[in-house]
Amino acid sequence: MSFNQEGKLNECINKANCFFVEWDFENINKSFELLIGISSKLPRTTVIEKNESYWHGVCRSLIFRFPDDLEILKLPKDGLIQIKSSSRIGASDLGVNKNRINYLYRQLIKKS
Image 1 (cartoon, rainbow, N blue to C red):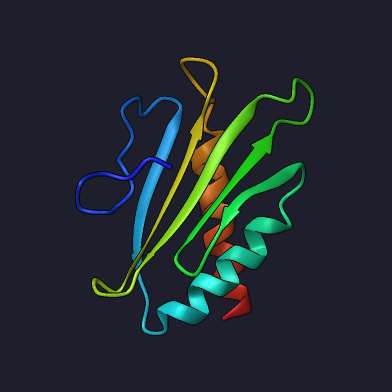
Image 2 (image 1 turned 90 degrees about the horizontal axis):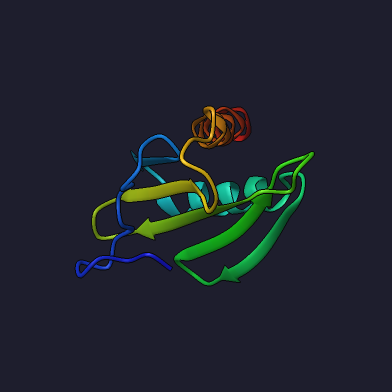
């Protein structure tokens, strides 16, 4: 877990291998559950932790099996969901983490 003192996800230190977003939703609980369902079904993803407001999974690349951490945090008081996808290895991810989060958003919109 990479939480800051405010109980939110830490933003990316290296933006070349990490992508971070905050989305606001009318129905934050429904959106959070949908995101968890979509994320849990991503190929080569292992769920590490899941509770009522936080989900953490490790997504591995197809060929070399590089691990990326995917974190989703629900902040009900703020009406926000934070999502962070970051590579554990390497200085650049060639856009993989940004593409992963954009994919999650497209799937969420389809299911909403």
